[in-house]
Length: 337
Image 1 (cartoon, helix red, strand yellow):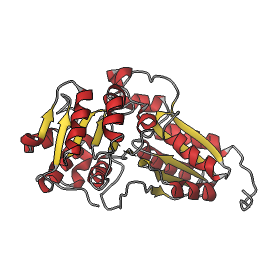
Image 2 (cartoon, one colour):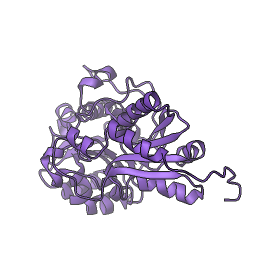
Image 3 (cartoon, one colour):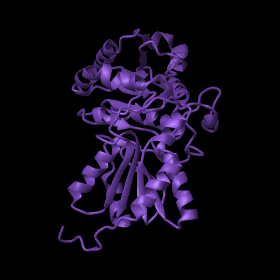
Image 4 (tube, one colour):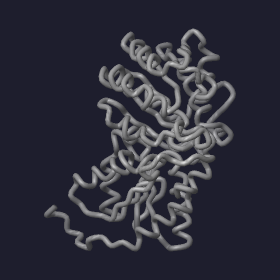
């Protein structure tokens, strides 16, 4: 699946565009071919970049004002009427302010509302803790029927938005504020919801990550190869639900050490989803979750917070080195487990 091109941009402009902008342009391009697509926002037309769709299709765009709960109810009604609503607002407002409407109006009825949640994690760090969103994986993946996707960069955001059209139920796509560096050099790779992508192969340890931490994990793996002689596998688990069980278990068997890294509370997110798969398998390994501690994150610019919480490449290098000093059960015979 290639990145959709608009009238004046292509995939290779991604390094100068935010993920939000790529989303807005992708949606506008998709809407040219599908007149069932409509867009909604709660007074965040420019902030979420759905403005690109609104400018092109004003008759199919609805700004409901600062009324997120109403917005998701309206979107559910539109979906029941045969439309495909794309709803844009900040992640914190989606999963907490309007959590009941997302659950009951959308997920419970299993309608095809596509939720593009921006400013997720700690990407809007200087706006304050109330605008951080480090709980959304835990909330959204607990809703039945909901697909949860966290793209690594703008190119993958475009691919996720396109792929969401083929998913019959609701989809939650989580992106940051949009000033994160690109992870992929081009769109020449396959993207399929529920199928993880191996960014780098390795045999000593596996890092399973998503979102902005994918690039940092890849850079950490390169550093560890050069400085420590370690072979570190990096898996982009862009889909939190449904999660790729096969990729997880292959990593357990091949490397016996698993580190999860996420821009989310260490409780309830990617780490817990991976841990559940491993626990249910009955196979043992060294396992650690790394993310935001179980606290309300501090206030500051995003790049400073990533370093503070060791979500940058240097922090991930330190976590890997700690894990390499831990032993796992040497028995390789799992036939009795």
